[in-house]
Length: 238
Length: 92
Image 1 (cartoon, rainbow over the protein chains, first blue to last red):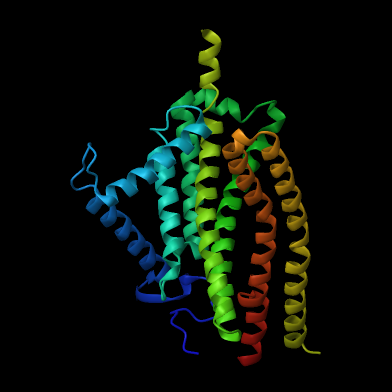
Image 2 (image 1 turned 135 degrees about the vertical axis):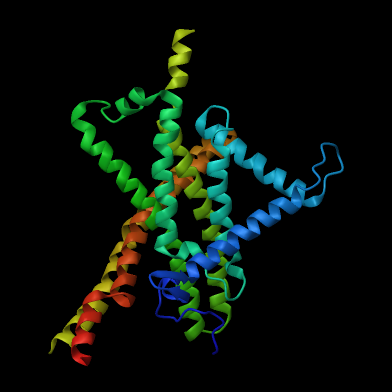
């Protein structure tokens, strides 16, 4: 059966499919698909927000975007227990990018860029860097560093190791889920009637959405735990 | 048996065992987690949203270990450096 995919069945990552290379720089499928996802997100948002209406006559796309943004803002506010505005751009973009890359897998020929460990590692590194930034912004430098020696200075290596391991877990969780979805559909396509690959592809879409949600929620939980106690301190002084 | 056959055989067998054993623990854990979440939702129906969200986050953490086993199994089958090495030596 002629496969519509550009990747062979033996490749586990879109990194191996190189479209163009120049000395050491390679333009591989992961980068191209990431750019396409970025283009779609930016273009879609720009088209939907060209004529923003404040009254009752919203365009359908504006309504759709408002539903998504409001839902994200409410979730963030519930997790962070404070105003969602500083976190919404970062966490919202994480969710939208991962969700769109996973959802577009329904189109033949699309390989989710999140099926490559490079993309998921990059996203996890962004969260690793973002958590201290939000923590320092919220608590101040010394107060944030004090977090690492809670509850006692002996815990310092544990806390550092914990930070690194949860970053690694974020990357490998997303990579494993999405890569396994594409691989299972591809392998089943080679050996079973069309019904089973279709069902597995649907399951892959569902897990893609869930993994996007979980990545964003976990990033928000890490940020919230780093930016939190200021609230309790303010309440104590009142 | 020469190195080529030995490495191939052990890689494939280990890949199968890895994912077979690795799926048991998380499945049991997730079953318990969902059962507790359902009991909690039955006790406090209006907290359903929080319980569901916490359940999903917990399930993702538990699923991670199964995903690690799956990734190791995939590496053994598709991106095995030892297999590539012996194939290269046998061919070259």
